Image 1 (cartoon, rainbow, N blue to C red):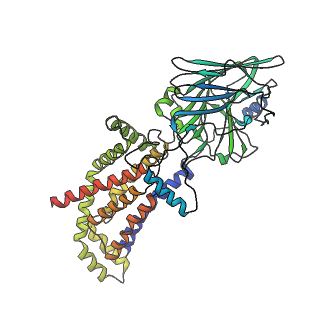
Image 2: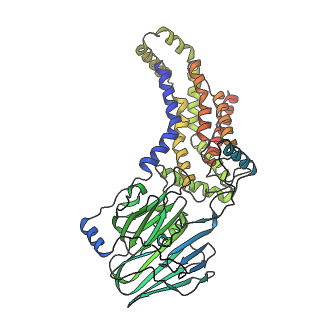
Image 3: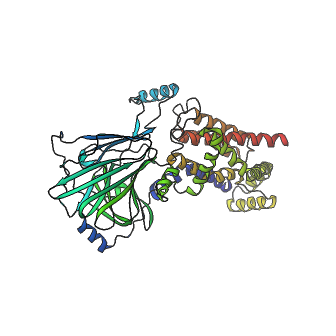
Length: 530
């Protein structure tokens, strides 16, 4: 029947929307790049003033270059005298993965064995922001015009080991060739991911500071490793595949340039808006160099190398928080995170905060949910009349549809009311999903027992199975509508959702599970009241 088909199509649309909207956001919205205008005159002038990066092979042997180690309470950085570049920066407060609970390790080991793979059991390591290893591909290299800058000539450092605690410290590096002298000063702060960089030359030069990184290291399909920058057109997130090898993309009036690494970012901000050059070294590696505006003897940059924590980013630059991409549902994701941060001050557990969020959403939608249940009860009462109409007009579908709509209108019943609570909560669902993918607070946040990372899947798959079971129970408690064939098809919904949620972040599964439990309690309350 057309009425039944319409209802089934709506239910199917709800199920598929979980997959379709996330995929659509990833492919078309999440990384949509608004390319700032590249005026031909400015681009030509920029190309004349500063040459694009031409990769130089580091000379061998490499004994002439030494490392400089900088230790702060927050990170350990290693610089090299080759180009004064950054060789490594590991964040002490963050690990690259979470050690699995024994039960989760057993389940994942069994699955790996079935598929002929080996489970990675290596211990967690501090997060590393430098993703390249060749000297000539390390970040924080310089490009200059007006002088013969040769990176094979080592920089001379003021120290080989610098410990930062209590007060800011400086690392001075000097480079010279012929009558050209450059001095670079790194200024470090004990309790900040910010680094100040100044470069002094003994003549006026155009100078750019850059970051080079790999784009193939994202942890999930929806992760992002690549360039982001803020210019006249707002924030632009440029897909790495949009940068062709041998092509140099030029952008004007850029306030900062960042290399995004999911929950972390490496940001370079010149003193005033400058020019950005983006290019590709190979299939996996892209680079970006940002310059100060105009030739000068003095050049100043600010760096942020750390987690995408909104508070820390705002302390760095008021606009730096834009490096966090909350996606299409950001208008909902941001308030959700604020609510959870508030409750976290009392609970100290992000899993409990997600459960409290589910309760809060249930209370917000209490009235429409109540009306939905009442409407479903009315639909149940209409079942005999609907069957009579179906039998009477079984050969005239158009007339049947008209009579059914008239029946619903006369009895003031909405046939699709059963889907209303789910439809209302879908935006919250997607907003929480985005929050789990980008919020540093929720990354590797433990809950209880085997759930040690709310931003990752449940390695035991217990919570998705519990979610499916509660969804089945909730469905059984819901007043039945329509014919038996339709009800049988509805029984597949919990199975579909369970399979769909197996690899979703466990925090998202817990939200849906808690929402189901609160829904069951609500239905039991309504049943007893009657």
